[in-house]
Structures are given as structure tokens and as C-alpha cells.
Length: 563
Image 1 (tube, rainbow, N blue to C red):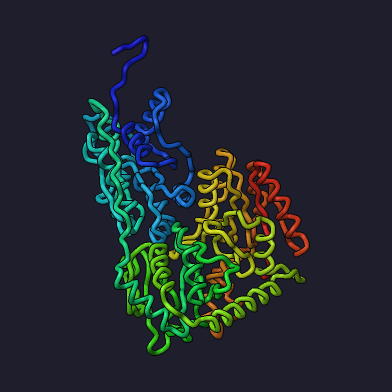
Image 2 (cartoon, rainbow, N blue to C red):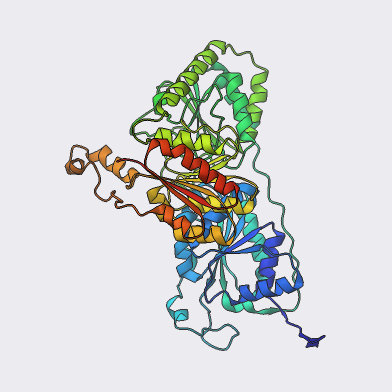
């Protein structure tokens, strides 16, 4: 049909797919395309001519980076983002960061095409050699253990309902990624009309059992040496002031063990550092808040008679095959809700905690004074000085994505949402991508990625800097470059320091020398790059890089740390 010189096209399922994503609050469509993408390309083209509401398309030439960017964007918006990749091979490249998102309970709508189902007779049937080689019996089987739900589109009329179900599952407590398989034929098929798109109201997280709150409040009031261990509340930023108030009222030491987000301001007098080990054996009540491994049973154990309480969206971490920490009480709810309810109960109780509060404050002040002494400039660059210099350069409002090197003992963070650490799964190649995604979603924020040299190489840096250039995402990247996989070396020496491995100080399979000139990587994409080899060079270099970012240019500082 011809209308005013224009051919009227029938609606296709791909258009509905994109429109439904937007109607469910998806801001960005991160894509690494292949031969399964023609209906997506066509749908975006049609949407542009109709001024339709669609997510913003973001071309990302590596799937692992796309997933990391979606994570960072979620941190800024609180809304799940969409990633679409090329059939099974693209799905395979997402798995590393998909595991990170799964363990961090980050909602994501991950979609992939599927090799055309039909060999002939349908619009979109197989037309290239790879359409046979890329077919699998169970494509979703690759990711089924990491996602909450997976589904393959069967008929085009179903597409709006599929998106609604994907969003509903991803955002239900506990949140997490989902996976859609979208074969080319139904995604490009014509529809008679736009189906109804009706986002569903996601159920609120469960409210804590009032009797459990009463019981725990009583235990806190009775305890002589209570301890809170937490990895941070994720994006539940209301939990930060709630924890600060509860800890101060009841004089409870808080350890931010293996932090993945800010749990308590560094200056809070009840902040007891970042290593739970020395305190676990002293406590008579331990409250574990959103921490999958609050201590290491092969190295520490609670004292006899110590009560242990687990609090979180999924306090039992039921998707972990083995986890054997003791538990006398478990409360499944958002940490902010539990902490506020506990504080209200304790406000009505008489607690004689002034002496304990004074001792914990004294311990806190001594720990910070010791850290300040360790972070002064010396003859060589150190992790402590590196961390302090970054904190001084970027300020308290900067949002830091850290992949291993940064020491929060020496880089204080005060505000909720200004620090994110690598997932408990530890899949490298996350930090810079997450920082780029955060900058995309919150361009007014100052975003920093602090990375080890191994993590930086894992993150496909050429692609990262290309994406930063193409989409105008000025972030500051600081590399702690010791030319090795530090975690590999430390693990080896912890077990075999006196064995053959100790002969070369654990360097075998950990040595990453010779180190490339990483500062040239960012320069190749028009960014600002510097190399630092002496302590006195670090602060001025960071200041120049910070100013370059504030001026709209991506920047990188390659800090060479002596082995």
C-alpha cells in the first residue's frame, strides 16, 4: 500500500520488542550485532521515522563490556537495562560478567538471537553457512545457572508478554539477570496491530517478621561484644544512614568485609575496618548483612556461644551450592527495612553502652591514624599512597568502580553510592565497563575506574576507549600496575611458599611483564594518558587527568608499582 508516496510497512515483532523494553523503563539497548539483528536494525530505523519511544541504542564491540556497562547504568538508574548479542557465540562472551551480575543480584534483560530455525520457506530462513554451525540443542543451557529465568520466543504475537515477564522476573526480589532467545523468523514476522503493553507492578520485597525483629533487638541489648559484618547493601542506599544510626545507638562495631558497595561512612566512629578476621572470635553476637562469606572458616570461627544472625534479601544465598556458616536467626528483607525496624525497637530500650562506644571510637581513631601514617609518600610508590592520592584527587562526590587495587583504609568514602567493588564471583574485566555504563546513565557525575593491570587487560581496553570516544564518556582510569596477577601470586604463596613455588616468589603464571604502555591506549582514542613511576609524580599527574576529564576528555594514569 502506498500512502503519500511512502510504502506502508506492516508492524514487525522487533518493533514491539524495542517499544516494550522502553515502556518497562529500559533506558539503553547495549548491542553487539550479527546476522540475527536485521529485524532489530529495521525496528530502530522505523522507530526513528515515527519518533517512537525506544531505548537508546549503544553499539559495544564486545559482549563482556556490554554487560558491564549495563551493570553501571543500573547502579545509576535503579532500572534494568537491555543487552542483545549474537546467538550462541555472543552469549558465550557475556558469561564472565553475567556471573558477576548474578552474584550481585543485578537485574538485566539479556537477549540473543538464535540461528534461523528454518532452512527454507520462511522470511528470515537460513541464508549463510554459519546458520548451521551456530545452531545448538539448548542455547540457553550455557547461562541457565546464572540467570533467574530464560525463554525462547515461539510466535511473534507473544513478544510483548515475553518482555513483561522478563522484566517482572528480573525485578522481583532477589533481583537478577534473565535471558531471552529471539529467533530471526518470529522477530521479523509481521503483526496485524500493536499488542497491548502493560508493565506489571513488581511485588514489594518481603517485610521482616516482627517477632524476629523483637528477638534480635533483645539479643543486641544483651550483647557485650556485638559485631556487624557486611559487604554493603548494594543499591539499597537507604541502608547506609540506617546502619550508621543503629551502630551508633547500640555501639556496634561494623566491619565492611570485602566491600562491594559503601556500607558505612569511613569517618563513622563504629567503623571497624575491612577485615573481619581479628574480631570474629571476640564477638558474642554477629550480625551478617548481605555478606556471602563473612569470615573464612578454615582460618576463623566464632566463639562458643556466639549467636549468628543473617540479614538480607536472600540471607541463605540459596544459589550457592555449599555455604556452611552457622545461623541462629535469619531475616529475609531489604537491609534498610530491617535496620530501621531494629533501631525503632532499640530506641525504647535502656542500654548501657557508653563505655563500649568510647572504646570503639578510640579503636576507630587509632586505626585511621595508623592508615594516615602508612599513606605518606615514601621512596617507592605503595598501595597505601596510591589509594590516598586517588581519594585526594577525585574528592568525596566521585563515584569509584574498583577492581582490586584500591584500599579504602587509605581512600575514605563518606557518601552512599560513591563506591562499587568487584562482585563476589571475581570475574575480571568489569570495572572500566561498569564505569562507562555509569557515565552514560549519569553524565553529570565524575566517574573513576581503579584497576589492576590484569583487570584492565581483561576488560578489552581498546574497545573500552573506543566506546568512551564514540559516546562521549569521559571517565578517569587509574591503573595500579605491578606487572602481575597479584591474587594468583598471593594464593600460591599462601599454600606453597616453602615449596618449589617460593623459589621465584610465586611469579610463575602470575608475571605480566613486560607491561604495555597503557597510557598510549587511551591516547590512540584522543584521550589524555600519563605514566607515573615516582611518588612525587602521582598527585600532579592525577590532577591533570582529573582536569582533562572535567574538560570532557577521557583520561588514564598508568602508575608503575615496583615489584
